[in-house]
Length: 251
Image (cartoon, rainbow, N blue to C red; front, side, top):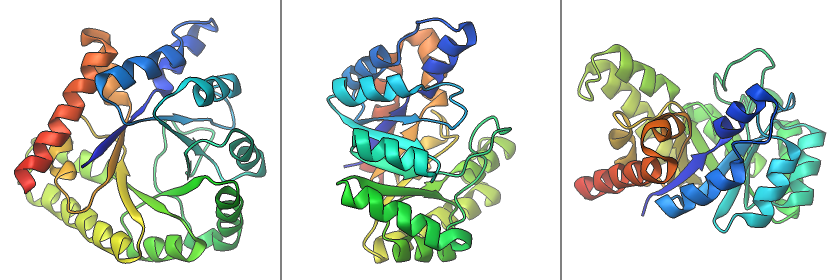
């Protein structure tokens, strides 16, 4: 059964915009849990632009569903992960000037460094994940460095969906879905878990949720955006319903 990991970074973005104490990300985690989330995702960025160290510590203690810590593959971040021991740690590329993560991790270009980071996470009992583009050479490299999970970057698919009439049957969208499907097959062929995320929303999520063997979607911005109008618990409930509905159609 497909699972939903809710990224609550932008709850912290609102708080940090005023440099105050609210809204509280831990409260958001509780609301997401009550709405049906299977996990909570946060990205502790090197510049601490939204989530803070204290948030991760609090979530690790209070969250009753699994915690996925997104992070750059730096010694500082690996140290933090090994100390706090989230259930999963996902290595992502990170740029100081990007608004959000703009592409997948280039494992091929830095295998030795990433293999060392993965080894440390694994030794600490943490499930290791990598955020990569839907490219077979990157998937093969993820297997070589010992990653347990590959989260495929769905940004190109989401942008094609947005730019071609929100039509899931357009040639451009179908081409991106084919890439995601092939990536999923390669990931599962290596015995790794197939997850996906980035720029998924209430209108484009179902074709991705129908992909064979997909285990988990990580979605944040769309859910937090809808929560402004309907509340976080309901926003999560609606997304989870769409995902489960899509999988039932695929059978």
